[in-house]
Image (cartoon, rainbow, N blue to C red):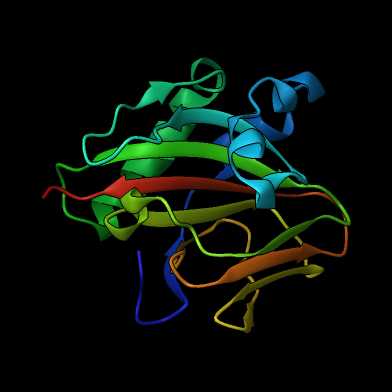
Length: 178
């Protein structure tokens, strides 16, 4: 969604249950579903635990992916809390994943082009981060704190550079009721 500001801080959330589950994931779990890496060139240097995914619009067909069975409980609780506090009820979550940008990795400058992004709120919750992560939107660098929810203006050009160890965000897309 195109926002008035590049990043909208929603506030602190209880991310610990999901963080614990994601940090404890086996290395092969991060490689089990590479739909994002195959679909989007800019995500080649990332790994994902994909829980929910839709690439159809305007009637999204949401698939439960390999990460759903393992991470659904803490992910759903986190998403429900954020949606209840900040968005109108009755919408749909059409994508949800933990995304790891490897140490030294980069997500190239891009803007999200799928038509669903004009209607969906893109929410990021940093689960593991550090001050060596440079998240740039509209040419401005933003530090997203661990355990704080943010909505990002993903229809603007954005890029990420990781100058430290792995960085992991939980990301989901919420489409409010029409």
